[in-house]
Length: 383
Ligand code: ATP
Image (spheres, rainbow, N blue to C red):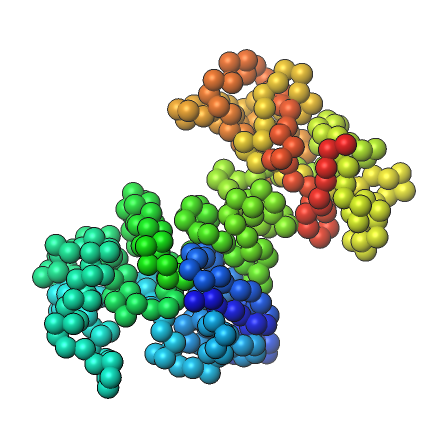
């Protein structure tokens, strides 16, 4: 089922009497979720992820805008008539019911022509239990299950009516690190097998990047970027998105572009040609000065550094952390915007690194340039 949000806004009244403005949890969202895909809604705490999910499920009504499932306008349709399956962080299974009864519970509400016999319910539960691999647990109660198994029961319960849309709100955050990893793979598998359009809320960028077909990066109720995880990682639209994705995070330096060269401090690190509209200074925010110099932020992904004794970027070496296949080289530079630069180097390439200084050349595809004021990406090519 394709889902479309058309200029959707959600305001909540502000409970703080001193502040008269409403809280705008979701601000003018317009995007289309393609049929049968797994979408990760990603952003820092309070950015409006859960509200977006609640608007799609029908648990919240938008203050403005329309929501469509396929071509049908569902904006005024109550949650129970939208055909959505929901899984929350605290998946709240019924403790006194067996796994089987927990899974069949939503089917008990069906009435009229849709009403099912006990046998039909059992058959449907058996089918989804097989899908989420809990067939052998059907007679247990939730207290007799591990966290991961409980999570699977919650997913089975959400799937048993074969919803057209599956909405998952931080479904893995109660699981320990190893189980989280395993369950997220499971989720991706279940989604592929069922083909149900699935929207998955998380603040964990790695989780969203690893299993989503598309990610939606949000901040303060506004969508910043939508795209395939790798595309958004490689070509972030602004500094916020660049910093939000990636572990270790992107390394950000104060830089400038002058005479076709990108400088970090006094080091001319790349030859660059800024995209036409960026270089000609039409943009009101352009900080281009008289002598053609433009102040920018330079973002370099940790994997974008190549150790090279003749490389143009000269950093003070702090320490080397061997992590097995890769080595993390920790260094500093006067133009670095944070505390320490983290570069990830294949261990076999670190032989020459030592002493007080480490020099790098850069992989251009791993370098991003941002306007110093607007923090928007400036496209560039290498002449
Ligand atoms: P988290 O990751 O912390 O769960 P989130 O991205 O899911 O955050 P939301 O729960 O959607 O964020 O909240 C977005 C904003 O709307 C926040 O500022 C929140 O305080 C506010 N908000 C959410 N629900 C209400 C409500 N019922 N009344 C007033 N404000 C609300």
